[in-house]
Length: 223
Image (cartoon, rainbow, N blue to C red):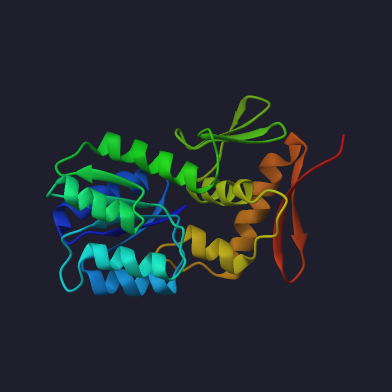
């Protein structure tokens, strides 16, 4: 999953980047509202962590523009001014959750999991597809309750395919979902990751079907 952090306090932003990347997310960061608005207009993110007190363009205006473009991406607002009026204004503009500074990184990660799960319409942190399951909290995959050893990139790839099981996912969509700015990941590299993941999960009566020239689809194999 790919997240965007819009936060101008670089010390706080660096802490969030380390924490969320270690949890297996692809995370980008901007330090002002103009850059946040531009990034959100150009890319699709699974979650926005938005500081309200951004320079150049206020966080509430970033939020208003995001929703005006029709985006339904979950938004977790960070604010140092935890007033009821400000919370109401943000929620009315389309924010999904609020956290007042200072906050616990552990709680923030839990809220991120809840919001991304809600954004996918899932009721649990565990995604299942036949005997294959993925625990989004522990970032661990299982086949018939036996853990599968996967690299960080393979875990991200599996998560994207599971979220869209039975539907076609293009290589460009995989790059967009798995890679941060500056990552050098080609379509050929995506093919390598898919090949490795396919070999590791094929025992679970699921397969990654290749639709030549279009992309991939996670399917169950009929018994």
